[in-house]
Amino acid sequence: TQLLEQSPQFLSIQEGENLTVYCNSSSVFSSLQWYRQEPGEGPVLLVTVVTGGEVKKLKRLTFQFGDARKDSSLHITAAQPGDTGLYLCAGKETGNQFYFGTGTSLTVIP
Amino acid sequence: EADIYQTPRYLVIGTGKKITLECSQTMGHDKMYWYQQDPGMELHLIHYSYGVNSTEKGDLSSESTVSRIRTEHFPLTLESARPSHTSQYLCASSESYGISYEQYFGPGTRLTVT
Image (tube, rainbow over all chains, first blue to last red; front, side, top):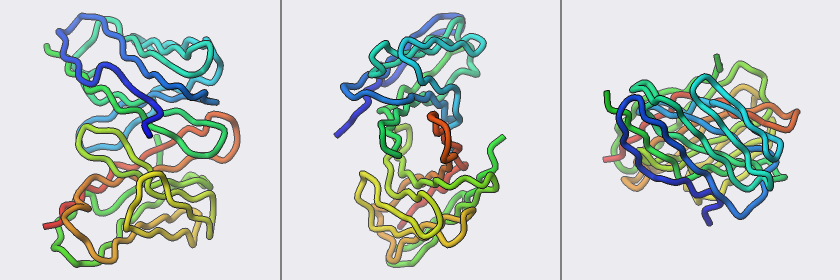
């Protein structure tokens, strides 16, 4: 059973464009994380959100946790080729396991 | 900078061989995890540990086994490798306190079974 669905699955955009990636679930999470993974490497944590409605900014990246703590979004402003990678959300329920989303593969074309 | 290491980074091995994938972390984390990932796809949890002598199977059924004799070390073993085991294996660790439980990942081991 897939708890976290990400959309879109693939995204190819031109440098300078804006984009939003979505992470949706019917489950409530105590915290939600966003990771970026480059080919041949492990995922690297970008941000953790824990409060419903929380918004965090990391330079050109804006992360939002839904009010009900069931969904999240990642918005990138003025995308750059260095943003290329696989973006993964991961939610933690009340137990100890993390559940990873289906992933969004982003390509930013120079 | 996370201090979690995996060896080997790449492994090509024949069917039927026994292999052990190593994972070590120097952060003193109690919780450690093994994930399996096909290229560009989601991560599937195959094993996790809450501390020494504690191991549990994850959501994805796996023929591999793990052990946790020391806090810093969480090796994964395949007794008899098969082509269906070809994948990337990622090890991670996290703290036991707080509510965020952020995970730190190693670079992964890409396994190919011929």
